[in-house]
Length: 116
Ligand SMILES: [Zn+2]
Ligand SMILES: [Zn+2]
Image 1 (cartoon, rainbow, N blue to C red):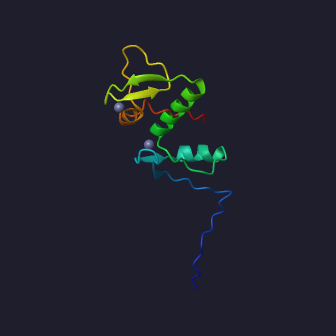
Image 2 (cartoon, rainbow, N blue to C red):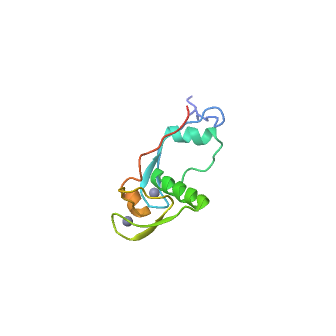
Image 3 (cartoon, rainbow, N blue to C red):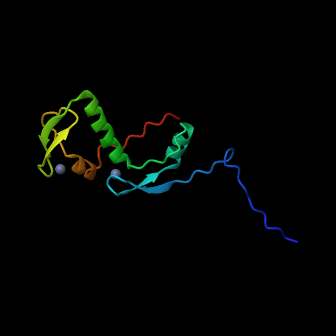
């Protein structure tokens, strides 16, 4: 007789991470929730998966930082020329974008600063 064995993996001892695609609630883009990031989240006891793509996270962080420092400058976006407030002092000669254009241009470099 052949009993169908159900492999019941113990989730506490053998966690399988699989990279998955999440839709950002901010900009609606798909982004990868990578295995590394999942491990990072797991190791830090985060039970919620990220809701925002890396770009939107960077923007949010900048905005929050700016609010804390109350360092907001009014500038005109170099792309759409809309007036926008940026949470930092724009450098001379450097184009400044509003948050939506910022995201469109990739939102700065991807920061992967996980300590292994
Ligand atoms: Zn996003
Ligand atoms: Zn813009």
